[in-house]
Image (tube, rainbow, N blue to C red; front, top):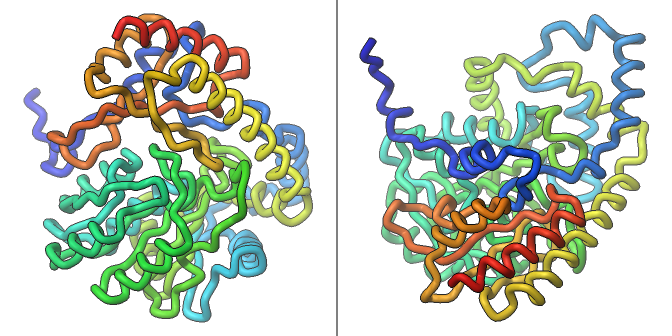
Length: 394
């Protein structure tokens, strides 16, 4: 059979990260290429207890169909939490529960993008988002990431040029893959530029709760008096990625269209997992758990950065992140980045080549992305020492 795939899917390539993970999935490979939460970060006992109670007391609700917008008590809990802690929920906003934050990106693309519309994105950026934009036949326009976030002068140049720009995609906190955090000054300017040029902002914040040091910076959504910011949040990094519960706060008109789009995708996010998240939010010590996992990641981040300095210090440059899961390291001009990744894999250390996160096939980078949340502390030490030996081949 000669299969004729759609143009939408034919143009997409497999995620380089997922392919690396498959190729290096043996138990003896040190996973610096992943992005999974640490096994220590899962509140397993809480989830076990909550699930048992739900299936004992409300089994039919948990196992029945739910509404597409999401389990109402959870929507109310998130609204209360985001309003009180982050001042994110305007009078004209609504909320929808999604099956992971990836579905937020998909639904926003589905309801806003026509073929040849432009998405302006940080470059480098999250490959899952870039592939989603490509799947809707959107054109990508990249804006360089600096040590304090997106280059705003370059962003304005792109906005002047790209008259079909629909929205700006940004990960302002501990950006994936660069690890940098956008300054408050740049967040304000980003909002003003979006307002000036009549485009929306998709503020993707999966790592915001994972701050290891420094003070929280207000969300871009707190500035939103014009109804132009779509805020994406997730429970994947603070509770469990396997539960697949995330949410969007956005203007009501947009949420209504996203709801229709979700009905055509998966009808609704599983009710049981939504009930688990709601119970955990409202009757368990969520803030205490977040404090605990911040300490876990603070220790892992400090451990890896110390080893980068001691094992690779004269070979790479990097901006030390204040949180999140990733460190973005640039190799010297004369180093072959792809070969470095290949030799590392041969020595049982998986790292992601930076080209996986770039906007265009012709883009060049000497960077690699390292993840510190997935490996054990012993794995971090062992893996970094191996990379220290690999560098001597270059």
